[in-house]
Amino acid sequence: MSDLLIRNCTVVHVDTPQAARVAVAQDIVIAGNRIHAVLPTGQADPSRFSQVIDARGLVAMPGLINCHAHVPMVLFRGLAEDVSIDRWFNEYIWPLENNLTPEDVHTGALLGAAEMIRAGVTSVADHYFHMDENATAVEQSGIRALLGWAIFTSSGEAMIERSGDFVSDWHGAANGRIRACMAPHANYTCSDDYLRAVAHKARELGVSIHIHAAETMSQTQASLEKTGFTPIQTLEMTGILDSPTIIAHGCGLLPEDIEILSRYEAGVAHAPKTYLKLAMDLTPILAARAAGVPIGLATDGACSNNTLNLWESLRLMAMTQKDRAGSPEVLPIPEALYIATRESARVFGLANELGALTPGYLADIILLDLNGLHHQPLHSISASLVYNVEPPDVHTVIIDGEIVMHDRRIHTIDVPAVISKANGAKQRLAYRNPGQRIQTYNP
Image 1 (cartoon, rainbow, N blue to C red):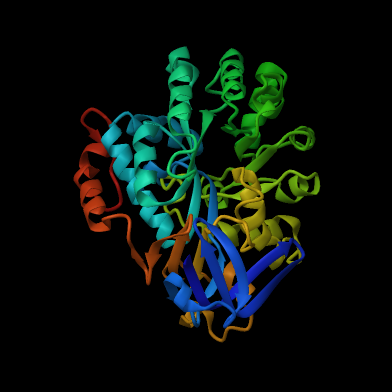
Image 2: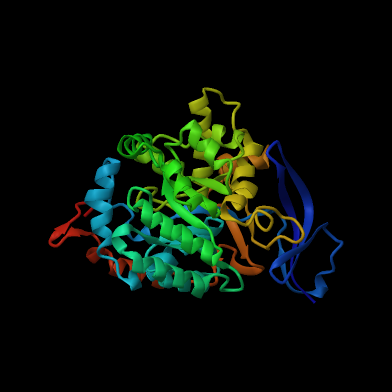
C-alpha cells in the first residue's frame, strides 16, 4: 500500500517566473516522504492507501519556505517597538537576549514552529542561540529546518568548534528534515580572522553558511569608510562565499556586490516587513534577480516583524517593489509566486527537492481553503495566493510525507501547554537590565 492520497484538490503549479497554472480535480500520491504522482482524480484507487485526505474544495501548493528567521524571538514579541534600528539592537535586543535560558529557546522554538505551521510554512532557516534546544523542538514539531548557531568574535574561537559539533550532531537528523550550517552573525560582529576560521570550518564539514550582511545602506557605507570594502567584498575575501551562503537582508547591496554574489552559490533572504518597520530601505530585488542572484522570502524575527506569517512577506515584497520601481507592472503575480516557491527553495539549499508539486520532490504540501469572504468572488486563485491569504485559510499541512496539521489542528505540538510556558516566562524575559523592565503599551 502507498502511504497517502490527497483526493480531488486543485493544484497550483509555478513552473516559471512567467506563468502560474492551475489544475482542477487532481489527486496527489505520496509514497514515503516524496511525491510519487500528480494525477487526474479517479486514476488512483483510494483502497490502496493507508491514509486518504478528501481535499474537495481545497487548493494544494508547495509549503512556504522561510529563508531567514530567529524563531525563538517570538518570546520578545512586542517588546521593541517604535525605535531606531540602533536602539533596537543596543537598548533592547542585546540586553533582552541576556535573559534567555536554553529552556526558553526550546519553548520559543516550539511556539514559533506552531505559528509557522498554522500559516503554511513548512521550512525555516533559523539563526539563533542554544541550537541543540532548537533542534529538539524542530524534531518534535515536524517542521523542516536549516539550523545555524549564531556566533560572534566575542564568543571566542571555542564557539566555532562548538558550532561545528552542533553541525556534526544534527546535520541530516530527523530523516533529513534537519540540516545544519555555520552561522557567523555578521561582518560587523565578526572579525575578518574569525570569518576566515568559520569559512574553514564550513568547508571542512561540507555545509552552508547563513550570515547577516549589507543589512542597510548606512552599514555598507560605514564598512567602506572603516575598511575600504563593502560587507559583501569582505565575505568574498574571507572565504565565506566559497560555501553556499544565505545572505540575510542585503538592503545595502551595491551593484558591485550583486555582481560578486552572482559568481557564487549565494542567495538573499528578503524580509520586507522588518525593513519597513525599522526604516531599513529595501533589498534591490529586481537588480539582484536580473543578475541571477536568487531571492528567498523571509520573516526575520517576531521582535521586528511581530509575526512569522510569510504571506505578509509575500504581498509586501510584491507591493514595495512596485512602489520602488514606480510601476505596478513589475514583479507580477507569477513571479512573486515563483520567488515564494522554487526560488526560495534554491536559497534554502534544496532547489531540486522543494518548491514544486512534482514527482520525486519532497512531500511538503499545504492545502488552502479559499472559501472565505476575503476571497469572494474567486476570479483568480493565484491573485488570492499573493494578496489575500491569511493563516486561518491554511487547512492542512504535510511535511516530509507526514500530516502535521489537519483541519487546522496541529498534531505534533501541545499548543496550549507551550503558550502557558511562554507566558510563565514573560515577566522575567522583559527586563533589559536588572530592575529595569520594558514599559509596553499594555504593561
